[in-house]
Length: 247
Image (cartoon, rainbow, N blue to C red):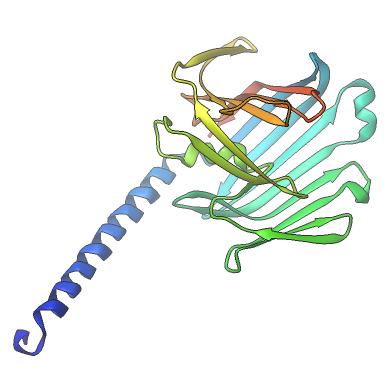
């Protein structure tokens, strides 16, 4: 049979067989790694605005076979409760690279004008965002997350986290790009009587524009322990973990 096959063709076939075998091994390793990750996470956060009580956040993250669902409900404290509950939902697929959103929704109380929707067309590489009933489109890059899913994507990154991290996420009305460096020293954050060893993700440049810093629980699948957000006007929101249940 070899007499009828050119040597170069034979080498190509052998190389293809090796590539397919390696790809199969990597896919199997990724599947085993994902299988070890939690299927359900329940987290509760308290939020302060400029140091004053602002809201409580209750989040549910669940995986069913190869799909996931996230719900995040923010309830204001005091006068902030008058704005109604802020509900974020994200649905999508779980892949070897992590979470792949297909739809994101943001609802603020009963006000339909504040609702935001984002549909992820991965095949067409198109992100479709609906704001006040009007459609906005943007190119959809690999790895793009939404406001609900990005916090749970860190657990799918290769451990240990040590390199700079890029985060692309949609708020439902626009795309934000964040670049982070990981602080070389681990930091301990104590919250609700629990000490968490964390990785501190810091923007490489601090300026007057909107910034976001994160402290990820190194021993709890990199679930965020604390998130610090500063908007364009200098308003500071700090979200701190108070309860964590992992299954």
